[in-house]
Image (cartoon, rainbow, N blue to C red; front, side):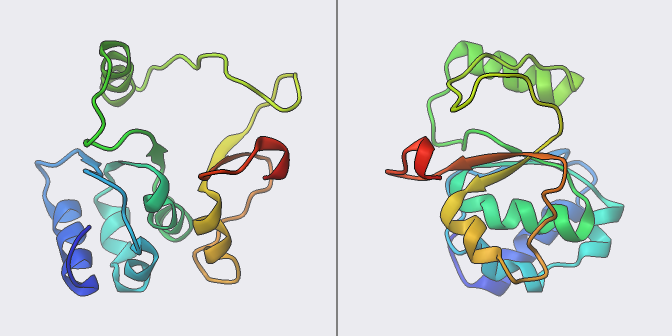
Length: 154
């Protein structure tokens, strides 16, 4: 999201206005995306929901959109990543069929959990605290990622 904040916000709103666009995928991180949050038309976003996929720096944008408009977003790859065939297949299945399989990963504590998956980049999540864009995490599974943070320190 290069450029001035107002230009970036207007570009994003144009994506939401366009009925031909079904999915918005970040081409790279959304550095300073939290500055766009007060510039967005959340009523327009509610009337024209899109699938939004981003990672890391887009966390503030994703969580702000969820909190204010209820838009469900996806934490995933940006378009600058060379996606493996399995990742491409899984992504397309999720986007087109709303059908996906969760693969086993490394956990801090073993067990089974159910709830909405919320979170993203730890630094950006903490930057949203105390703002109107910080979501409620009740009955949610918290997803955290950041550079150089061990799981037991998050």
